[in-house]
Image (cartoon, rainbow, N blue to C red; front, side, top):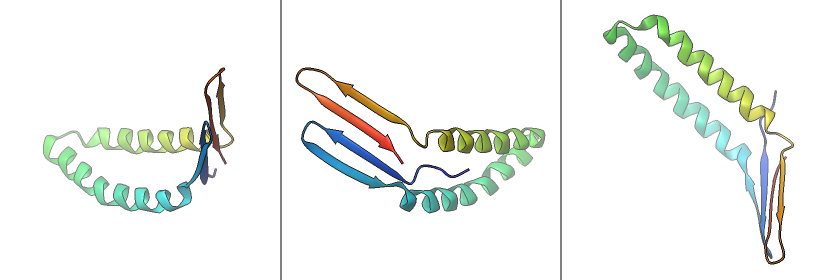
Length: 87
């Protein structure tokens, strides 16, 4: 399962592509830095059994983001055109 790598946005005459593949490594590093603090907080609070729920929630969010690959949103009206493509 691979998350979307590029997001292409077009609004009227302006179009831009956003390289999401540069964002994913940053998010992984932030997640790896954040998880030990979550584990420590749950140990102190005595809720360590819920730590696995946090891991499951993180994995479910990843699966949801991966499912967005190939998403195409086109909104057109008389005066406005708006498009998003996740590739």
